[in-house]
Image (cartoon, rainbow, N blue to C red; front, side, top):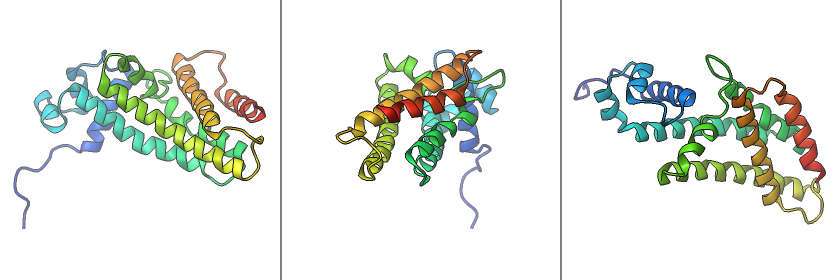
Length: 199
């Protein structure tokens, strides 16, 4: 039997990926529905019928990004190597994404756009907090594993280590977007991991 109704003329994942690109480049406030329509090749009525208003499109695009990106980071973090190697791999796994951009690196689309809106929008603030909580939880779990293996100093708090390691991730995202001419991301990652593990 043929499905009822008119077939979709768009792919939701492709459309959300294109919408994310528009937000990533110009931020939430700096991106209009016209910009999203141009990026996706969809009309404004079609966009809104498929995804809702601008904020709904943004939240869905970020949620889709988080599923894939955080999954990649988790695979690197729990790769089964030493704690140092897994942490370095975790950070280096971000760089292909953070360096994305037609005119230069754009950093992380969540850290570099949602933080701006979080102060005034409870929904986006909750989305941002949930993403940070997931990263903290993953890092905490990895440090708990290291603690059980005797790879952390006695009495070390895995949760505090996890939050510190998360802060390094956020710094990497911001510094990448800032395009500091003397910033060496790989060297920053390796030195930061060594410094954290010496605490």
